[in-house]
Image (cartoon, rainbow, N blue to C red; front, side):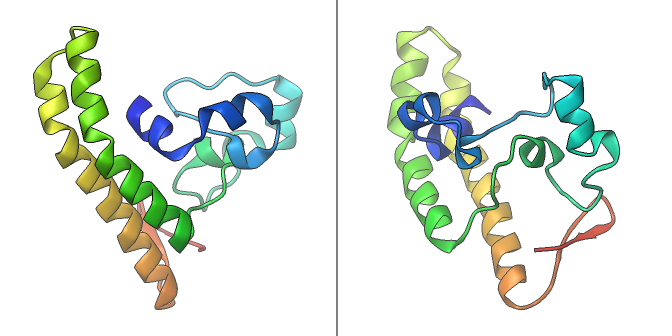
Length: 131
């Protein structure tokens, strides 16, 4: 997950800005003030969202240009991932499988974008999601 976040977000701007476009979240652990969580609709909102955690962090869905740039960045990031695995003594299998994970992630994103452009909603957990 950290490589996806690092590939999508300009960390320097993310640290300097409070703009919601630079928000990110990972659903395994979210910390929020109770009042902010309740204002956002709590656990019931948005029921139509595939990625509630990203919605709660106010991340906007990817458009064609940002997805194209992200595709290039994430694909090119394999060399950095491999170098980091060596530098920080991480298992090399994760680095070797990195391109597969990125390819699957990007295929899901491009598929959802294509469905949006032909007027079909993405489907997640049996729910049609507004695009």
